[in-house]
Length: 170
Image 1 (tube, rainbow, N blue to C red):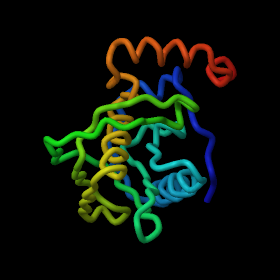
Image 2 (tube, one colour):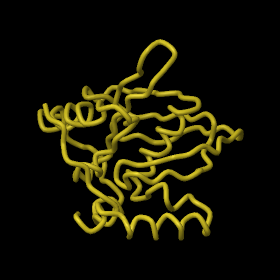
Image 3 (cartoon, one colour):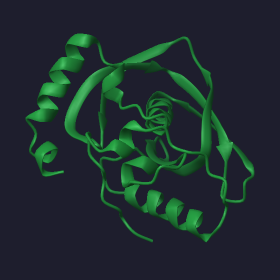
């Protein structure tokens, strides 16, 4: 359908818990199509509905794999399993562009939700996909990855965000 504009840090929709999807209709199909189109450009791995201004619990992902890319979406997702093993890699966010900070996440994650037909889906991921599943689910709970940083890194990140051109343009 369309590549939608991204909402930036400071937009209230990003700090609010998204509501559950209850209507499985053409509007939802259009939203999922837009999420899939908007996550496609290079450098993107995941996108939650609030990042395009929609306060519903849905996200898309498009993650590189050994065989190409793994693309999909989950409606009304919930994390049902996280490994004890962690990863501490750099993480960024389309809503906080240009800023990357080491963020601790589980190495493996399992998300359960539904598809457009309201049929159950389960997505299991390791590495980048696991990070993506956790990051996007955080968005649906009104959290940005900045809240997962150490206090020192969070202060540095918030300062950098306030000094960014996009912060004042949005």
